[in-house]
Image 1: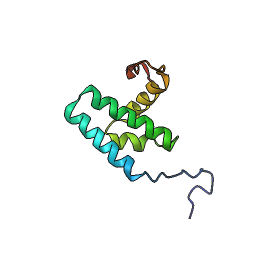
Image 2: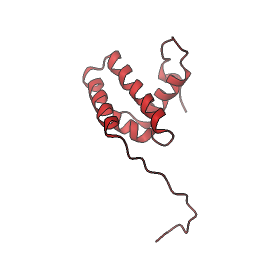
Image 3: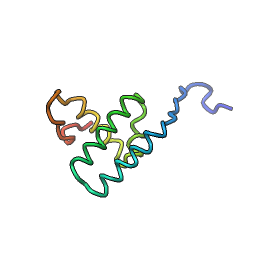
Image 4: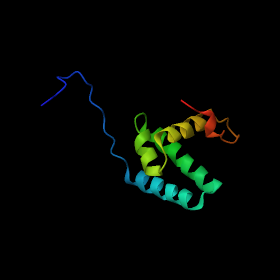
Length: 97
């Protein structure tokens, strides 16, 4: 039974790969425990890699598993896209919505 009479488009659901879940949880826990720059960079790289693999609409799921907010995950992704090859990733505070 449809309460919207077909006026609302269906939303695709994402079945996350098990390796994504374990990797993001592990890297998020490592960063929360150590708060080191290498741990943060590894977590951020995993967020970007999985965002590119899963595509649009996956950011909330990725952020939840990594232990960051959706907004922060979006900033991380934008910073990685804006980085020049061979240069360090710019700070995420530059990437507000």
